[in-house]
Length: 401
Image 1 (cartoon, rainbow, N blue to C red):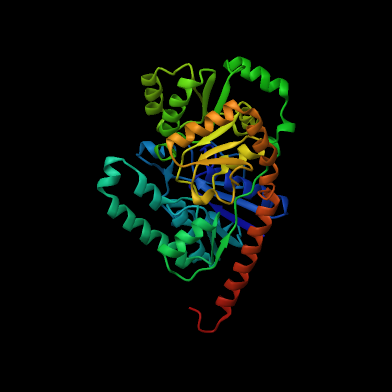
Image 2: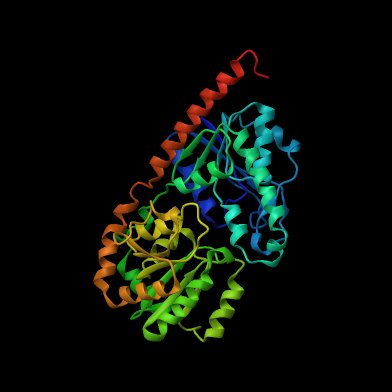
C-alpha cells in the first residue's frame, strides 16, 4: 500500500505529533508499505534528501508559541507532485494548511482519507490565560468547532489515542463517523534501563553535578499549557525541607524565558537546571538521571513522554487527568496528585522512602508493553483497509456523485 501522511509537524520540529507520525512511518515501512510524509518546508533543511519526505513551501507563522511552524496556502501547484506518488490512501495528522492540502488532494484524486485527532485545541483555549486568547476566545472556539466538524464529517475514519478524547469528540460533535481508539505506539527499546550503560549515567550525573541528589525530571516542550511553572513552585516548596534535591528540565519552547526568570526570582538557579534540547536518540540516557518524573499538564491527548518515562523504569508523579487512567495505575507504576500540597507530600514520600520508588519502577516498564510500534502500525493498517473497502463501495454505487 502507498500511504501519504500529511502533517504540519515533522522533523526538525519536536513534539508528540512528530514522534507519533515518525513512529507510524517506521512501523508501516516495517510491514512492507511505502510511506510518504507530506509536510511544510523548514528553514533548517535547505534540501530534503529523503525522497519519501515531500516538503511543501509554507509561510512562517508569526506567533511566538508556534515558532518553526509553516502555513501552507497554495494547493493546486502541488497536485501534480502528489498525483505522481500514486497514493492509495491519505492520512491526515493536522487540521491546518497541510490538512487542507490533504483534503484537496483526496477530492481531486478520489482517494479515501483517514484523520488522527492529536490536539485538544478547545481545552487549550479554555485553560489558557493569554490576554488575546481570552479576548477572542468565543471567536476562536467557533472557528475550531467549524473546522473539526468539517474534518470529522468528511473523512472515512477518525483515530483518537484514548477513550477520553473519543468521548470529548462524540459529545461536542454529534456527527456519525467511524471512530477508532488507537494509542500511539513507538519503539521503546532505546528507553529500557538495561540498554543504557550505568557508567554513562554516572558520568553524566557527575558532569551535571547531580551525583548525590534526589532528582526530579521533566521532559517535554516548554510552553504555557504544560504548566511547568506549577512544577517549579511545587519543587521550590519541597526543596525547602529537602535540600539535597534538584529539578532537571529537558526541552525547549516559547515559555523558557519566563520559566528561567521564575527560577531566578526564587533563587534556585543552581537547583533547577534547564538542559535545553536533547536529541531524541540520547533521551534514553537522560531519563536515567531521574528518581521521579514530574508533569502538571492537563492538556494531553495521550502523554508520550509519560510512556517513555515508564519504559525507562522511572516512577511517575503527575497531575490527575482522566486521559491518563489507561496509562498510570495509581500505586502500581506511578502516583497522581490533584493539588500542590499533594505534589509536595508525595515528593516527600518518594524522597524519604526509596523502596516506594523502586516498587513503582518495577511495574513501570511492563505497564507500557502494549505501546509497541508494530502493534500500532498493524491497527492503523486495519483502519486503512476498512476505509479503502468503504470508499470502493461508495464509488461503485450508481447514485454516488
